[in-house]
Length: 424
Image (cartoon, rainbow, N blue to C red; front, side):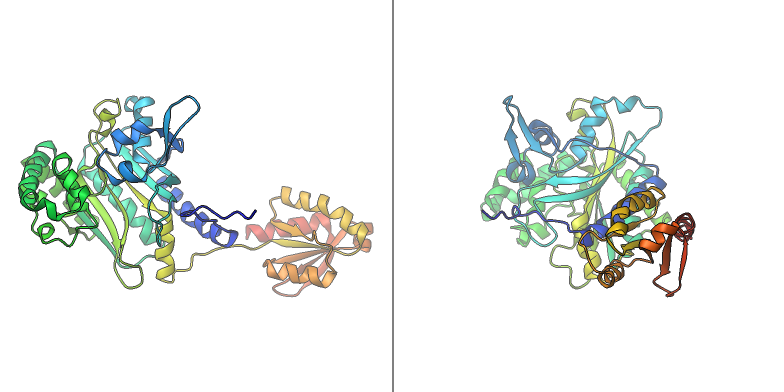
Protein backbone atom coordinates (compact mmCIF):
# COMPACT_ATOMS: atom_id res chain seq x y z
CA UNK A 1 0.00 0.00 0.00
CA UNK A 2 1.28 3.45 -0.93
CA UNK A 3 0.73 6.31 1.47
CA UNK A 4 0.31 9.96 0.55
CA UNK A 5 0.63 13.06 2.66
CA UNK A 6 -2.71 14.34 4.06
CA UNK A 7 -4.37 17.08 2.02
CA UNK A 8 -3.44 20.56 3.18
CA UNK A 9 -0.08 19.53 4.66
CA UNK A 10 3.42 19.53 3.26
CA UNK A 11 6.80 17.89 3.65
CA UNK A 12 9.43 20.56 4.20
CA UNK A 13 12.48 19.01 2.54
CA UNK A 14 16.08 19.87 3.47
CA UNK A 15 16.61 22.47 0.73
CA UNK A 16 13.51 24.33 1.96
CA UNK A 17 13.93 23.80 5.68
CA UNK A 18 17.12 25.85 5.45
CA UNK A 19 14.95 28.84 4.48
CA UNK A 20 12.62 28.14 7.40
CA UNK A 21 15.57 28.20 9.79
CA UNK A 22 16.59 31.63 8.51
CA UNK A 23 13.17 33.24 8.97
CA UNK A 24 12.73 31.56 12.35
CA UNK A 25 16.15 32.82 13.42
CA UNK A 26 15.12 36.32 12.34
CA UNK A 27 11.97 36.06 14.49
CA UNK A 28 13.98 34.89 17.51
CA UNK A 29 16.57 37.65 17.08
CA UNK A 30 13.99 40.40 16.58
CA UNK A 31 12.04 39.34 19.66
CA UNK A 32 15.29 39.31 21.64
CA UNK A 33 15.90 42.93 20.63
CA UNK A 34 12.35 43.90 21.61
CA UNK A 35 12.66 41.92 24.89
CA UNK A 36 9.90 39.40 24.10
CA UNK A 37 10.35 35.96 25.68
CA UNK A 38 9.44 32.69 24.01
CA UNK A 39 6.45 30.67 25.25
CA UNK A 40 5.55 27.15 24.09
CA UNK A 41 1.98 25.98 24.66
CA UNK A 42 0.40 22.56 23.93
CA UNK A 43 -0.68 21.76 20.38
CA UNK A 44 -4.11 20.76 21.70
CA UNK A 45 -6.33 22.36 24.32
CA UNK A 46 -9.82 21.95 25.73
CA UNK A 47 -12.28 22.70 22.93
CA UNK A 48 -14.13 25.20 25.12
CA UNK A 49 -10.99 27.38 25.29
CA UNK A 50 -11.28 28.21 21.60
CA UNK A 51 -15.08 28.36 21.64
CA UNK A 52 -14.93 31.00 24.38
CA UNK A 53 -11.69 32.69 23.38
CA UNK A 54 -11.91 32.80 19.59
CA UNK A 55 -15.71 33.10 19.47
CA UNK A 56 -18.69 30.88 18.69
CA UNK A 57 -19.65 32.97 15.65
CA UNK A 58 -16.29 32.74 13.88
CA UNK A 59 -15.64 30.48 10.90
CA UNK A 60 -12.73 28.98 12.82
CA UNK A 61 -14.92 27.62 15.60
CA UNK A 62 -17.94 26.80 13.46
CA UNK A 63 -16.22 25.18 10.49
CA UNK A 64 -12.45 24.81 10.74
CA UNK A 65 -11.38 23.23 14.04
CA UNK A 66 -9.90 19.75 14.32
CA UNK A 67 -11.79 18.45 17.37
CA UNK A 68 -11.66 14.97 18.87
CA UNK A 69 -12.63 13.13 22.02
CA UNK A 70 -9.89 11.50 24.05
CA UNK A 71 -10.18 8.21 25.91
CA UNK A 72 -11.44 10.03 28.98
CA UNK A 73 -14.35 11.49 27.04
CA UNK A 74 -12.88 15.01 27.03
CA UNK A 75 -13.34 17.21 23.96
CA UNK A 76 -9.96 18.45 22.75
CA UNK A 77 -9.00 20.58 19.75
CA UNK A 78 -5.77 21.03 17.84
CA UNK A 79 -4.97 24.71 18.28
CA UNK A 80 -6.24 26.80 15.33
CA UNK A 81 -4.43 29.93 16.57
CA UNK A 82 -2.07 30.94 19.36
CA UNK A 83 -3.54 33.85 21.30
CA UNK A 84 -6.18 31.90 23.24
CA UNK A 85 -3.56 29.42 24.44
CA UNK A 86 -1.21 32.19 25.54
CA UNK A 87 -4.04 33.98 27.35
CA UNK A 88 -4.98 30.71 29.08
CA UNK A 89 -1.35 30.24 30.15
CA UNK A 90 -1.16 33.85 31.35
CA UNK A 91 -4.18 33.34 33.61
CA UNK A 92 -3.26 29.82 34.76
CA UNK A 93 0.32 30.72 35.63
CA UNK A 94 -0.67 34.03 37.29
CA UNK A 95 1.63 36.05 35.06
CA UNK A 96 -0.24 39.19 36.15
CA UNK A 97 1.75 38.89 39.38
CA UNK A 98 5.14 38.97 37.68
CA UNK A 99 7.30 41.95 38.60
CA UNK A 100 7.99 43.03 35.02
CA UNK A 101 4.88 44.24 33.20
CA UNK A 102 3.65 44.07 30.54
CA UNK A 103 4.41 40.41 30.01
CA UNK A 104 5.88 40.27 26.50
CA UNK A 105 5.74 36.84 24.86
CA UNK A 106 6.19 35.25 21.43
CA UNK A 107 5.72 31.83 19.90
CA UNK A 108 6.53 29.91 16.73
CA UNK A 109 4.66 26.70 16.05
CA UNK A 110 2.15 24.69 14.01
CA UNK A 111 -1.56 25.54 13.95
CA UNK A 112 -4.40 23.52 12.42
CA UNK A 113 -7.51 24.60 10.51
CA UNK A 114 -9.77 22.52 8.29
CA UNK A 115 -10.15 24.93 5.38
CA UNK A 116 -9.84 24.69 1.64
CA UNK A 117 -6.11 24.40 0.84
CA UNK A 118 -4.80 27.07 -1.50
CA UNK A 119 -1.58 28.85 -2.27
CA UNK A 120 -0.07 30.03 1.00
CA UNK A 121 -2.87 28.52 3.11
CA UNK A 122 -2.50 25.03 4.55
CA UNK A 123 -4.46 22.89 7.00
CA UNK A 124 -1.31 22.59 9.06
CA UNK A 125 0.62 25.84 9.02
CA UNK A 126 3.22 27.60 11.14
CA UNK A 127 2.56 30.87 12.90
CA UNK A 128 4.93 33.37 14.42
CA UNK A 129 2.99 35.36 16.98
CA UNK A 130 3.63 38.07 19.56
CA UNK A 131 1.54 38.95 22.63
CA UNK A 132 2.02 41.90 25.03
CA UNK A 133 -0.27 41.50 28.05
CA UNK A 134 -0.87 43.80 30.98
CA UNK A 135 -0.61 47.29 29.47
CA UNK A 136 -3.21 49.59 27.92
CA UNK A 137 -0.61 52.13 26.82
CA UNK A 138 -1.01 53.02 23.10
CA UNK A 139 2.79 52.99 22.89
CA UNK A 140 2.77 49.18 23.24
CA UNK A 141 0.32 49.00 20.31
CA UNK A 142 2.82 50.93 18.19
CA UNK A 143 5.67 48.72 19.40
CA UNK A 144 3.87 45.51 18.41
CA UNK A 145 3.04 46.93 14.98
CA UNK A 146 6.64 48.13 14.54
CA UNK A 147 7.97 44.66 15.41
CA UNK A 148 5.79 43.10 12.72
CA UNK A 149 6.86 45.66 10.12
CA UNK A 150 10.53 45.25 11.02
CA UNK A 151 10.27 41.47 10.64
CA UNK A 152 9.17 41.75 7.02
CA UNK A 153 11.47 44.67 6.20
CA UNK A 154 14.60 43.02 7.59
CA UNK A 155 13.91 39.97 5.42
CA UNK A 156 13.86 42.28 2.40
CA UNK A 157 10.16 42.48 1.44
CA UNK A 158 9.08 45.54 -0.53
CA UNK A 159 5.64 47.02 -1.16
CA UNK A 160 4.39 46.57 2.39
CA UNK A 161 1.17 48.36 3.32
CA UNK A 162 0.10 48.79 6.94
CA UNK A 163 -3.67 49.18 7.45
CA UNK A 164 -5.06 50.14 10.86
CA UNK A 165 -8.46 50.67 12.44
CA UNK A 166 -10.07 50.99 15.84
CA UNK A 167 -12.89 48.70 16.94
CA UNK A 168 -13.44 50.90 20.00
CA UNK A 169 -14.46 50.09 23.55
CA UNK A 170 -17.68 48.33 24.57
CA UNK A 171 -19.85 51.45 24.34
CA UNK A 172 -18.46 52.20 20.88
CA UNK A 173 -19.08 48.68 19.65
CA UNK A 174 -22.60 48.54 21.10
CA UNK A 175 -23.56 51.74 19.28
CA UNK A 176 -21.94 50.51 16.07
CA UNK A 177 -23.65 47.13 16.42
CA UNK A 178 -27.07 48.75 16.53
CA UNK A 179 -26.25 50.80 13.45
CA UNK A 180 -25.08 47.70 11.57
CA UNK A 181 -28.23 45.76 12.39
CA UNK A 182 -30.40 48.65 11.19
CA UNK A 183 -28.30 48.93 8.02
CA UNK A 184 -28.33 45.26 6.97
CA UNK A 185 -31.64 44.01 8.35
CA UNK A 186 -33.97 45.28 5.58
CA UNK A 187 -32.00 43.37 2.93
CA UNK A 188 -30.36 40.59 4.95
CA UNK A 189 -32.03 37.89 2.82
CA UNK A 190 -29.74 38.97 -0.04
CA UNK A 191 -26.75 37.80 1.98
CA UNK A 192 -25.37 34.31 2.59
CA UNK A 193 -26.73 32.03 5.30
CA UNK A 194 -23.77 32.76 7.59
CA UNK A 195 -24.38 36.52 7.39
CA UNK A 196 -28.08 36.04 8.09
CA UNK A 197 -27.23 34.11 11.24
CA UNK A 198 -24.71 36.71 12.31
CA UNK A 199 -27.07 39.67 11.99
CA UNK A 200 -28.23 39.35 15.58
CA UNK A 201 -25.37 37.36 17.13
CA UNK A 202 -22.43 39.36 15.77
CA UNK A 203 -23.19 41.75 12.88
CA UNK A 204 -19.57 42.92 12.77
CA UNK A 205 -18.71 39.54 11.26
CA UNK A 206 -20.81 40.43 8.22
CA UNK A 207 -18.17 42.99 7.25
CA UNK A 208 -15.59 40.19 7.19
CA UNK A 209 -17.64 37.94 4.87
CA UNK A 210 -15.75 36.77 1.78
CA UNK A 211 -18.87 35.67 -0.12
CA UNK A 212 -20.74 38.98 0.11
CA UNK A 213 -17.83 41.42 0.17
CA UNK A 214 -18.94 42.97 -3.15
CA UNK A 215 -22.54 43.58 -2.06
CA UNK A 216 -23.43 47.28 -2.33
CA UNK A 217 -24.43 47.46 1.34
CA UNK A 218 -20.87 46.60 2.35
CA UNK A 219 -19.48 49.82 0.91
CA UNK A 220 -22.14 51.94 2.59
CA UNK A 221 -22.08 50.18 5.97
CA UNK A 222 -21.75 52.43 9.04
CA UNK A 223 -18.14 53.11 9.99
CA UNK A 224 -16.99 52.21 13.48
CA UNK A 225 -14.94 55.41 13.48
CA UNK A 226 -18.18 57.41 13.57
CA UNK A 227 -19.20 55.67 16.79
CA UNK A 228 -15.97 55.79 18.78
CA UNK A 229 -16.27 57.13 22.29
CA UNK A 230 -14.14 60.13 23.17
CA UNK A 231 -11.72 57.89 25.05
CA UNK A 232 -11.43 55.37 22.19
CA UNK A 233 -10.91 58.11 19.63
CA UNK A 234 -8.14 59.65 21.74
CA UNK A 235 -6.47 56.25 22.17
CA UNK A 236 -6.54 55.58 18.43
CA UNK A 237 -5.14 59.06 17.78
CA UNK A 238 -2.23 58.35 20.14
CA UNK A 239 -1.44 55.09 18.34
CA UNK A 240 -1.28 57.01 15.06
CA UNK A 241 1.01 59.64 16.56
CA UNK A 242 3.45 57.00 17.79
CA UNK A 243 3.52 55.34 14.37
CA UNK A 244 4.14 58.70 12.72
CA UNK A 245 7.00 59.37 15.15
CA UNK A 246 8.48 56.00 14.17
CA UNK A 247 8.11 57.00 10.51
CA UNK A 248 5.92 53.97 9.81
CA UNK A 249 3.41 54.85 7.05
CA UNK A 250 -0.14 53.56 7.51
CA UNK A 251 -3.61 53.70 6.01
CA UNK A 252 -6.82 53.87 8.05
CA UNK A 253 -9.52 51.45 6.88
CA UNK A 254 -12.77 51.53 8.86
CA UNK A 255 -13.79 48.24 7.21
CA UNK A 256 -10.94 46.33 8.84
CA UNK A 257 -12.60 44.19 11.52
CA UNK A 258 -10.41 41.04 11.73
CA UNK A 259 -11.89 37.56 11.89
CA UNK A 260 -11.78 36.73 15.60
CA UNK A 261 -14.29 37.80 18.23
CA UNK A 262 -11.76 38.78 20.88
CA UNK A 263 -10.48 41.86 19.02
CA UNK A 264 -11.33 45.38 20.21
CA UNK A 265 -9.72 48.83 20.06
CA UNK A 266 -6.64 48.79 17.78
CA UNK A 267 -6.75 46.39 14.81
CA UNK A 268 -4.18 46.15 12.03
CA UNK A 269 -3.05 44.16 9.01
CA UNK A 270 0.05 44.22 6.85
CA UNK A 271 -0.54 43.66 3.16
CA UNK A 272 1.72 43.18 0.17
CA UNK A 273 1.12 45.39 -2.82
CA UNK A 274 2.33 44.45 -6.28
CA UNK A 275 1.92 41.81 -8.95
CA UNK A 276 2.27 38.09 -8.58
CA UNK A 277 1.11 37.47 -5.02
CA UNK A 278 -2.47 36.54 -5.83
CA UNK A 279 -5.83 37.93 -4.80
CA UNK A 280 -5.29 37.49 -1.06
CA UNK A 281 -2.62 40.05 -0.27
CA UNK A 282 -2.80 40.06 3.52
CA UNK A 283 0.41 38.82 5.14
CA UNK A 284 -0.59 39.10 8.79
CA UNK A 285 -3.03 40.63 11.23
CA UNK A 286 -3.39 41.54 14.85
CA UNK A 287 -4.95 43.83 17.36
CA UNK A 288 -6.08 44.44 20.92
CA UNK A 289 -8.01 41.85 22.87
CA UNK A 290 -8.82 43.57 26.17
CA UNK A 291 -11.18 41.25 28.02
CA UNK A 292 -9.93 37.94 26.66
CA UNK A 293 -8.01 36.93 29.79
CA UNK A 294 -11.08 37.67 31.96
CA UNK A 295 -13.23 35.51 29.65
CA UNK A 296 -10.80 32.67 30.27
CA UNK A 297 -10.92 32.96 34.07
CA UNK A 298 -8.11 35.41 34.69
CA UNK A 299 -8.01 38.96 36.07
CA UNK A 300 -8.79 42.08 34.08
CA UNK A 301 -5.91 42.27 31.61
CA UNK A 302 -5.42 44.40 28.52
CA UNK A 303 -3.47 42.79 25.68
CA UNK A 304 -2.35 43.21 22.11
CA UNK A 305 -0.64 40.91 19.63
CA UNK A 306 -0.33 39.62 16.11
CA UNK A 307 0.16 36.37 14.25
CA UNK A 308 1.60 35.70 10.82
CA UNK A 309 2.01 32.67 8.58
CA UNK A 310 5.54 31.64 7.72
CA UNK A 311 4.20 29.87 4.63
CA UNK A 312 2.80 33.12 3.24
CA UNK A 313 6.00 34.92 4.16
CA UNK A 314 8.12 32.43 2.19
CA UNK A 315 5.72 32.66 -0.74
CA UNK A 316 6.04 36.46 -0.70
CA UNK A 317 9.83 36.25 -0.63
CA UNK A 318 9.77 33.89 -3.61
CA UNK A 319 7.35 36.16 -5.49
CA UNK A 320 9.71 39.11 -5.08
CA UNK A 321 12.76 37.04 -5.99
CA UNK A 322 14.41 37.53 -2.61
CA UNK A 323 17.08 34.90 -2.02
CA UNK A 324 17.86 34.29 1.64
CA UNK A 325 21.51 33.63 2.55
CA UNK A 326 21.40 29.84 2.93
CA UNK A 327 24.72 28.39 4.07
CA UNK A 328 24.65 24.66 3.39
CA UNK A 329 28.36 23.85 3.15
CA UNK A 330 30.86 21.61 4.88
CA UNK A 331 34.07 22.71 6.52
CA UNK A 332 35.62 19.47 5.33
CA UNK A 333 34.95 16.12 3.66
CA UNK A 334 36.94 13.07 4.74
CA UNK A 335 38.21 10.96 1.84
CA UNK A 336 39.65 7.52 2.55
CA UNK A 337 41.85 5.26 0.44
CA UNK A 338 41.66 1.54 1.24
CA UNK A 339 39.76 -0.60 3.73
CA UNK A 340 42.10 0.06 6.64
CA UNK A 341 41.78 3.82 6.30
CA UNK A 342 38.00 3.47 5.93
CA UNK A 343 37.83 1.55 9.21
CA UNK A 344 39.48 4.52 10.96
CA UNK A 345 37.14 7.10 9.40
CA UNK A 346 34.27 6.95 11.94
CA UNK A 347 36.55 7.71 14.87
CA UNK A 348 38.23 10.61 13.04
CA UNK A 349 34.87 12.06 11.94
CA UNK A 350 33.62 11.81 15.53
CA UNK A 351 36.70 13.65 16.79
CA UNK A 352 36.41 16.41 14.18
CA UNK A 353 32.72 16.96 14.98
CA UNK A 354 33.57 17.13 18.66
CA UNK A 355 35.88 20.03 17.82
CA UNK A 356 32.98 21.92 16.26
CA UNK A 357 33.93 21.17 12.65
CA UNK A 358 31.16 20.48 10.10
CA UNK A 359 32.38 17.36 8.33
CA UNK A 360 31.10 14.31 6.49
CA UNK A 361 32.51 11.27 4.74
CA UNK A 362 31.69 8.38 2.43
CA UNK A 363 29.30 5.61 3.47
CA UNK A 364 28.69 4.17 0.00
CA UNK A 365 32.11 2.58 -0.68
CA UNK A 366 32.85 5.06 -3.47
CA UNK A 367 36.11 5.24 -5.35
CA UNK A 368 38.44 8.10 -4.52
CA UNK A 369 37.39 10.17 -7.57
CA UNK A 370 33.71 9.80 -6.66
CA UNK A 371 34.48 10.88 -3.09
CA UNK A 372 36.06 14.11 -4.40
CA UNK A 373 32.94 14.72 -6.50
CA UNK A 374 30.79 14.23 -3.40
CA UNK A 375 32.92 16.81 -1.58
CA UNK A 376 32.31 19.29 -4.41
CA UNK A 377 28.56 18.65 -4.47
CA UNK A 378 28.34 19.34 -0.75
CA UNK A 379 30.35 22.56 -1.06
CA UNK A 380 33.15 21.41 1.20
CA UNK A 381 35.88 23.99 1.75
CA UNK A 382 38.53 21.35 2.46
CA UNK A 383 39.09 17.66 1.98
CA UNK A 384 40.98 15.46 4.39
CA UNK A 385 42.59 12.52 2.60
CA UNK A 386 43.44 9.50 4.74
CA UNK A 387 45.39 6.52 3.37
CA UNK A 388 47.78 3.86 4.60
CA UNK A 389 50.81 6.21 4.64
CA UNK A 390 48.87 8.87 6.53
CA UNK A 391 47.68 6.32 9.08
CA UNK A 392 51.22 5.17 9.69
CA UNK A 393 52.53 8.72 10.09
CA UNK A 394 49.55 10.15 12.01
CA UNK A 395 48.87 12.70 9.29
CA UNK A 396 46.22 13.66 6.73
CA UNK A 397 46.41 15.45 3.39
CA UNK A 398 44.54 18.73 3.88
CA UNK A 399 43.41 20.19 0.55
CA UNK A 400 41.79 23.58 0.07
CA UNK A 401 39.21 23.04 -2.68
CA UNK A 402 38.94 26.78 -3.35
CA UNK A 403 42.66 27.40 -3.96
CA UNK A 404 43.81 23.89 -4.84
CA UNK A 405 46.64 24.06 -2.32
CA UNK A 406 47.34 21.00 -0.19
CA UNK A 407 49.72 19.79 2.50
CA UNK A 408 50.44 16.61 4.40
CA UNK A 409 50.28 17.57 8.07
CA UNK A 410 49.67 15.95 11.46
CA UNK A 411 46.00 15.39 12.35
CA UNK A 412 46.23 17.79 15.30
CA UNK A 413 47.56 20.54 13.06
CA UNK A 414 44.82 19.90 10.50
CA UNK A 415 42.18 20.21 13.22
CA UNK A 416 43.59 23.53 14.37
CA UNK A 417 43.68 24.87 10.82
CA UNK A 418 40.08 23.85 10.21
CA UNK A 419 39.00 25.46 13.49
CA UNK A 420 40.87 28.65 12.63
CA UNK A 421 39.30 28.71 9.16
CA UNK A 422 35.87 28.25 10.66
CA UNK A 423 36.49 31.05 13.13
CA UNK A 424 37.50 33.35 10.30
